[in-house]
Amino acid sequence: MAAFTDSSGKVWRVNITVRTMILARRALNINLCDLCGSGPETDRARDLIFNNIENFAQVLWFSLLDPPSSMMELASNLKGDSYAEAQSAFAESLIEFFPDPMMRQLLTKIYKNAARLAQMTESAQMTEIQSLVREHIATCSN
Image (cartoon, rainbow, N blue to C red; front, top):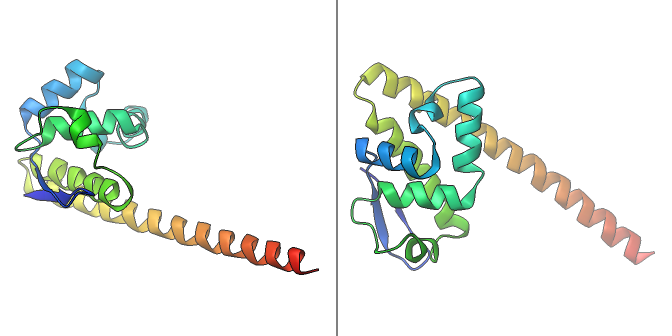
């Protein structure tokens, strides 16, 4: 079962079920199954979940095995590495949700490639930031 550790050190187990799917649909009008497809519905779902902190916190809260009494209690300890770890655990749990082994295998490959591409992008961003810092230091030295 997927899990993550929040910034206070508490370990949370993520378990996406049909209940999670229903709650996400009712609260946010999001079909979590759309996260696993392709096309406009998938792009919309990914944007609504992974690019919207409040929406992500809410669906994460829906998916916790033993959730805290409020979403805000959970959200208070999500930041930095713990937030990224929570996103990974959520994606892993979503993959585990599907009963078809071939579908799970395909989704695992897709998410691993997406993570690899994200790391490459972060690496390129860091290279650019380092270049700008060096440029700024050189300008200040003159």
